[in-house]
Length: 234
Image 1 (cartoon, rainbow, N blue to C red):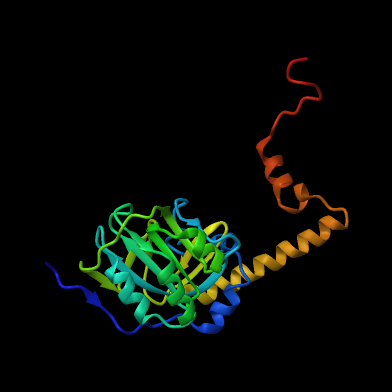
Image 2: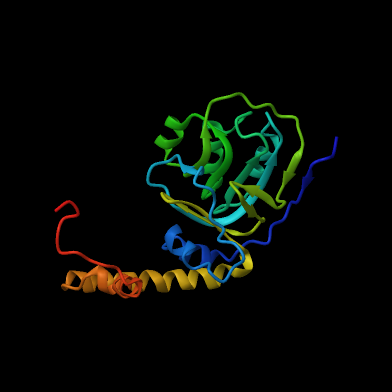
């Protein structure tokens, strides 16, 4: 059996940038990643478990073997306040990676939230506590503690590579991961996009149409669509 690989230190994305990212939506960040080789947007299988939750913070990672969550616990022990714990279970429905006890400890430590490729449980209690959780599955199946894996190594969570220290942002639309070196550029672009959209909303309230302001009218014009001033079945 290969010994687990555990890194005790993480080069984290800047805390001030995380604070800015909390004001940005996942959708606007996604729309601002066009210059990257990948969008960083996790699969639509990744769902928010805690209603209304939104987070932004540096990733700490855990790779867990099927049926086991020991490496999650080691990563949780090593995590710092404001971190987002990102867990990849290699067999998603083999073991619950997260529950109410881990939640209480994470809250005491000041973690921003947890993102799990795999099962979580005790969701009524977790939601009642208000701790931010995203997961691909809800199922209370037992987890052992004794297998290997890794902590603070690159993992693949819901089809996205997550490196320790990367910026993780999550809201009701999903989860996005921005490489640490690209985070400032992407967040700045997303903030600018949000301001442009705020200006559009103001223009709409003043009587303008989304059809014109969004560019839809110009795009439609180029199609050469044939319009008929009648019902299709007249």
